[in-house]
Image (cartoon, rainbow, N blue to C red; front, side, top):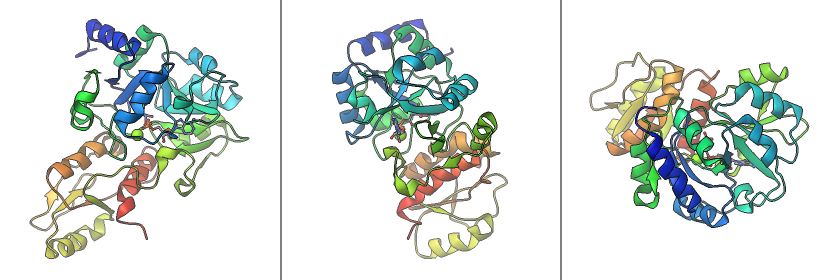
Length: 325
Ligand code: TXA
Ligand code: MG
């Protein structure tokens, strides 16, 4: 731990016990945490986040063994994924144990659980002892925060403590796997790849069509910067940019390195080198584009395999307002 010491962890634990809200880093994005057993704290979490009350929140725990305390049953595939991927960017949806607050489950019979792979998050969870319910620490509908400054910009004074441990390593949210049916289904692509899940379960795994909206936060246009996002192939960049410039739009470009030549007047956002870096910087770059008052971000997608699938999922959602019929 570099920036967060024992003292800060103790303060955060005390705040949680008082029913407060804290922001903390995970390997994916920053979370806005509340004691998952405190209904008053959970109610405030929804208000501060601006989130509809029927959206469930993920319970973060400090140890794989904690899964059994929150789940009514743990099917074999969930057990295997937990053993192989935790701590890590994977959320398992299982039937919930009796007594899990409705504010956590969104009123349903399942609960999403994960053990994050981030030293400050683990120190916090182990010092606290219980589960910490935490959505991403952005205001509802905004892109997730990958730095403490993003959290401050979105939630500012409404959180009691922000544990700042620098930028998140992975940068896109956890993969959500629904393990309550006959076969596990990916509800949200994320930090653990579909390929790895298939390999661990020794079967192919489907990704649920976001159009069916089973995980409420997977609404089509959930991740929306102010600027409109258009997904374009590198070969179309020049022509698209010229058209938009001619229409007096302020255009930013996000593309993997090496960045193709661009017409004068286009704002080139720093290019990520590979797909891991693309994931790590995606949300920060979209916020930067807003800061630069871009009307439109032309985004060149990475290949759709591995972590690229999660990046493309977020790009499509960010484009939800502009690209879709
Ligand atoms: O990486 C992450 O998952 C981050 C960090 C902070 O852990 N958290 C995060 O939380 O992305 P949030 O609330 O922004 O997104 C969680 C998603 C939502 O779409 C929610 O609907 C879904 O998980 N979810 C939570 N519990 C669920 C459940 N029981 N069944 C189906 N979906 C669930
Ligand atoms: Mg979120």
